Length: 214
Image 1 (cartoon, rainbow, N blue to C red):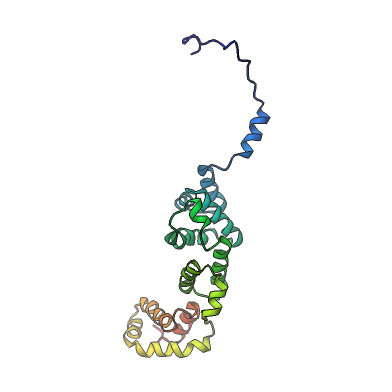
Image 2 (image 1 turned 90 degrees about the vertical axis):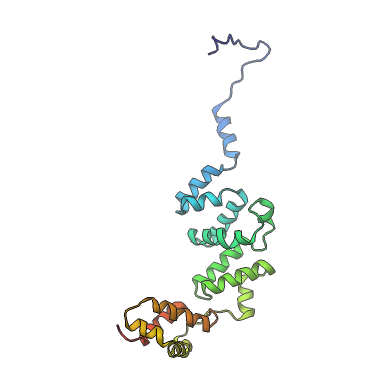
């Protein structure tokens, strides 16, 4: 093509020779590009491409996610909370919005740890998250102050389970007829009666022990 367009060297410019070592050194100083980071989120964290794409649209949001997931290494759970609960509250996902977020990534990770430990239920955690966003407090302080610790003592829950069974004979009859979905309804009623504080697994077990064998 140079011959076709009659290109010729500029006589006043000396040839520029760029060493590959210098190019490689410069490349290491560049930030990770969004596409590369998206691919890494899929390979490193096992995230769906959809999640990875949303998280890496903003460098600030991607940084927030990675800080949280280092503290709470359950990538998909952290992604779910960032993309749903956090983005629902934030005015945007740019650097300014993330910087002003009243819930630092480490505080989000500690909230998720409370769910894992059985200290609070997932439902209660969402309420705590909203209060964290409004007040800037950490999860532990809110849970302690408001008495939100999950009840996992079967003895303490047995009475509530018995009351729910007595108050919902139709659901018990449905269970007898093989309608397994009635169990979920009864679990929900116990959770409602305990304001979401009951441990769902314990409630489920107590109900199965009391419901007629179908």
